[in-house]
Amino acid sequence: METNYKFSVPVIENYEAEYYFSYSSAQYAPRIFPPHIHDTLEFYVLIEGNVSFMVEGDVYRLSAGDVIMSKPNEMHNCILNSVSTHKHLCIWFDVSCEFLFSTFLLHEYGKGNLISPTDEDKQTLLSLYDRLEKASEDKNKKEQFVITLEILNIYERSINTEFIQSHTPQALTNILNDINENFATIPSLQYIVDKYYISHSTLSRLFKQHLRTSPRMYLETKKLAHSRLLLKEGKSVFDACMLSGFSDYSNYIRLFKNRFGITPKQYRDK
Image (cartoon, rainbow, N blue to C red; front, side, top):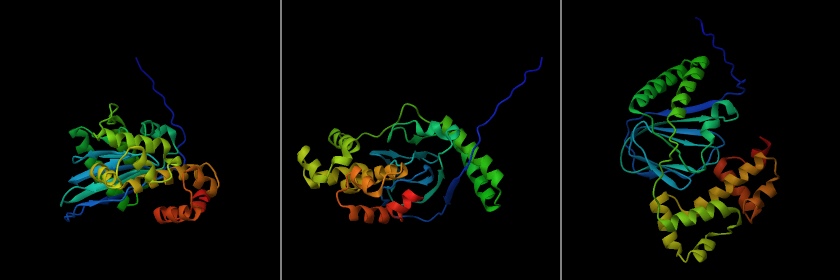
């Protein structure tokens, strides 16, 4: 008895992946990379090194082969904990194709960002990364396409639905929740200091110790991320500025250009 199978795949328009490999054996000093955001879905893969990764207030300690996924506008940064190598790669995907990327976008912001494949899958992925690098050098687009789909398939089945999260002090958790919900109406850090009866120095120490960033950078990045969403929706630069909680229009444009390399108007028009 024969069993026939048939399937169809939605049209994948503008499938776009960007990536780089950093496999240097050099030793790097401890470093905290600045928190930042992307328009794309990012997968950071640790190959070797003593690395932690912060996403929206949670800090994950990584083992070799672990992956951190950051969806568009999730604030994140890499942390080198000690003198060590930093072998890694990053892959960015345009997420316009719901068929391929919807599963990766379902998680709540800042929750469930760690992907830790099985040891067997990690070995398979290492082979795929090597094949992808070779296909890239050969400029073999079909091979690049097939390999990136294989990588995505392993990442998707390795997503942890129970959300492994780091533990932060309750005081910091309360402050982060407040910022995440009300960043657009928080004029400055003085609001946090006054509301939570905490000194500026203690506030800075909590952020540096647990998030490896400053409270000013965290609040500023949340506002900038929201403004980018508004610009993508077609809002005017002025509206994006004000609705995101920036009171100084000129300062907003300067911050935006310094952080992203283009002006808000150029970003919206793009």
